[in-house]
Picture 1 (cartoon, rainbow, N blue to C red):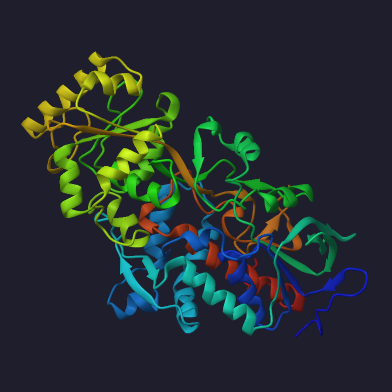
Picture 2 (cartoon, rainbow, N blue to C red):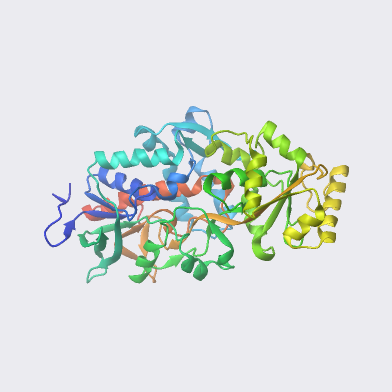
Length: 499
């Protein structure tokens, strides 16, 4: 152990080898990785509980993992690297992606040895080429519990309800400490290294309006409310560069309600046989695109008011109740979050949302058009053209998969009003492949690291479904890399992978 003790003294000062700012997935992984090597680590978490958005997650992506090996699945890091880079059109930092992928399989081993039980290795959608999505028993929340227990076993100091106010740099530019407010008392933590793992800025409307290139007022955030961009702002205040600002972990169309209701009704809205229209009453995309909540965000971003109306009929509703939500996004959300696949109370659920102005049930297209805010003629023309496409088995506008062409002909009709949703932001502080924070000349700030979605350069504008579970995967893997390199820094060893 590099520092002999971690004790608060009378002046409100403590000492620690490494300070980790944020107790979510990235911060906990970083803390465990550094503590396992012998560093004294202090976690500063502004909330009462740990977890952040990782606690809401399903699973994480990995290549060449022991789980894949046991199941006889060959997923090479080289292949996924090429897929990720091609998908992003090389907008991301290839060395960050390579470091992350090379770590990912070993991270599954690392988590398994700590007691995380991976019960599901699956395609997230049918069209994926590689099984990369690792889902643990208990999902993201169980990973948080396991890593939290590891921190306790390794004597990591965890200070909850402790908000970091500023990061300090010494005369030579190196990190020298952290100033925080711990339950109303100012606290100075003297440390040679710090890891920023505060999550994104999805809950900060001011930052969203500053960085999101479209109308941020139209966005609906459904992630952890503590993600206010604290780490990003503190880093830039001391000269850190930025990368990837304005990028989102998007999910749209999204039904804006309470968490469980949103997941349930969004899954219904994303079923591939529903019909999606904008405020003009026009269809605007192929509703059957696999994992359509990704492409759906991009398409909806360009619609008037960024509002989408999802229409299905009584026959479809009865089919959902009888057979469950099994296609489209249903495969994803129902497997992770809802207690069961079937929604026997779907009719009552939609009725309650109609009373809140977020849904409409009607057997009259005039009434539905008025509710949407378009002309009856425009909406009826759209429905007539669509129904004729269903009769012919060919969608001449968007070439929708014929097996999902079902006419809207059995009243009453159900309409769900959806918006642009997102779980987190996916960019911010500029880092290199060692997770070192870079200054405005792209030179590492000595002793300062960043991990998870607070960092940029690892994800492009649209989430790559071919490496599904990438946000949690990057959080845990970048956290491990940051923790290991922070230990090497404070112990005087060579930083891993530096060149």
